Length: 198
Image (cartoon, rainbow, N blue to C red):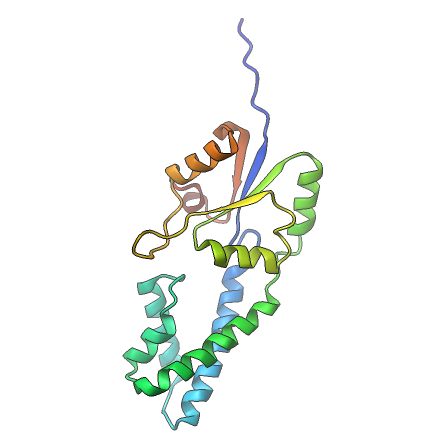
């Protein structure tokens, strides 16, 4: 009888958004602060604005352009027919308010200790994410998680600037880079189908 040597688990791949960090909750709060700043500025210009309408238009734009687009506020103000000479200041105020909210970004409470424990047990820890490398590393660094992982892999953007999705080739490249087999890794995420790239 032939005995098959079981594979030993070597590495754990963790999704970043809503697995390491409650990004969804943070995004809602940060956008709320940005809307407040935008609406206040628009009112100072004597413009008539309705928060509910602005939110509805903004959410439609995010759905159209994708959550990683840098043109959400630009597009919103264009569609609201805001005078062009006022747009730069309005956008800058909203963006500053959004980025100031990043000071409150924290990982889920159990994440740091879990990663420390796994590292002590000898596992390699990697973050994987659909998204722009700079933005995703910023989240990891702000939350102090960059020191608790071995590395991170991001899908990046295509030649048109569109965020690429997780898929089998993406994971294949990670495994090749780490010189590991699929059986030697486990993927942890918040959405099984999307995170696994199937």
